[in-house]
Length: 101
Image (cartoon, rainbow, N blue to C red):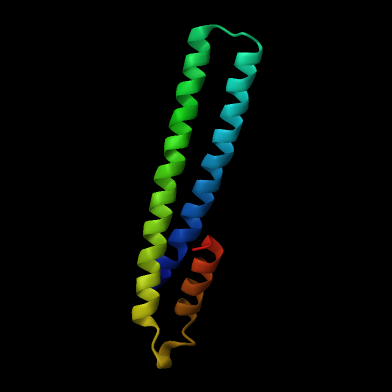
């Protein structure tokens, strides 16, 4: 179970960063539509896409926090003196550090 859980925060962190980039790109599109005085319907559609991107950021952040919390619990349960050099445990601790949690 630990090897699978170790990959979770890293995967979700990549997804989170992808959504952040997508939202930034979408914000630039909305700003461009506003600057170009684009059709109101087109602008509203772009704004809806921006809101959806922002929602995905929040959902992904919540999943990242949950996954990291679960992994942290597994690390605590697994971290016994005899297992302190266990490769899976070390990978789990690295994944938590990379996720910044």
